Length: 293
Image (cartoon, rainbow, N blue to C red):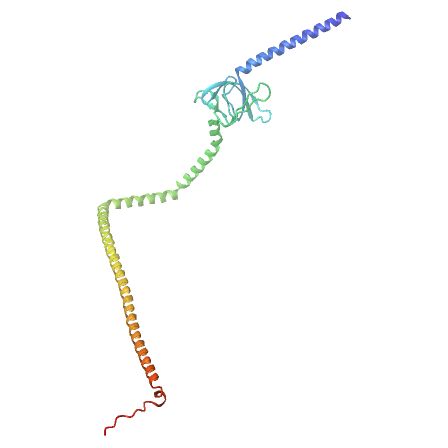
């Protein structure tokens, strides 16, 4: 029994030692691997033709890593997950955008990451757990493919309109318009001398009109001066009338004052006579005249 117990203890020890060595090896390998690359993922809708493991990943045109692997999105099979190994010293912001770019008509494709703004938060890679996701946008070729049906529809409409314009009835109308235009241009060419003379006369009339306008402006200036003089004369007449009214009023007041003075004098004289001879008010003047003998 003791021998079996020793065997079990030795087996457990060996298994624990092996497990510890495996964990240590994985930890060292993972730490070294994590220090060498930072993992990011992005998702593209549609075709990712030209991409594969080892495809270049560029940040603003500078190569910063490689594509690690491609997978279908488990939630949406129409999307493709692209896992990328990128330089861990590179700071990728949350508003950075990844797209598929082409090196030319005959060159391969690569993943291009446009730099984000400094104000946006930085995506933090994690060794364990979900990878940080970089936003994506369609490539130029995909945008052209998406807009191609719309362009084709517009071209078809243009072609239909051209066909309508080029119908037989419209052709004859266009021919008539061109004929009339040709006749008009010929007439203008034949009358070019008359047109030149008319333009010269118009220029002369314009110059004369400018002179007449200048004279009119001068006349209006003189009229303004005359109106100003009339206004001044009217003001002078008004002031003269005021002086005349004042003089007349003064003369009337003087005459009235003289009349009042005469009246007061007469009243004083009458009062004096009544004081000397009060009977005269009742009996009148009874003195007899002198009778010569």
